[in-house]
Length: 132
Image (cartoon, rainbow, N blue to C red; front, top):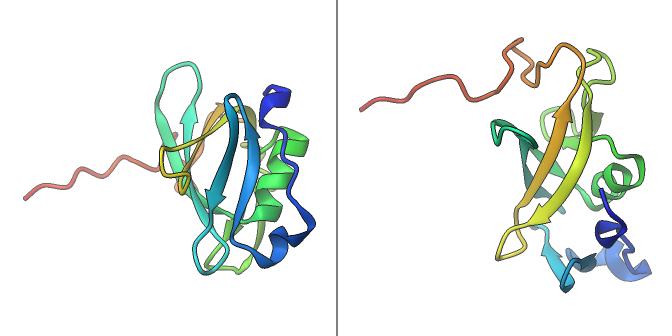
């Protein structure tokens, strides 16, 4: 993770769901929803496999960028969630990229531990085919 994605939120950011993050080509103003959340797609950096989708707050994104480990916001528990803190299946951040509308993040990681990202014990949370 390079310095070009280091987060420097303004002091007023806590009151404003839109705030600027230094990016490779200027700044990107991230757009958090009315609850102060932004979705994050987590992808294995070397294979492109989608591992999971989670939610982030300003604070969890700050912590993710500062520590190099994924930290999310659990909507069901209404609390901060350091991925792998209890299971050992941590995620080392390789890159963080905003989408074209700056309202979704793509977080490229090295999946650690037993290589499991899903709480079910599966490598990826995406394993249930939907048919019509």
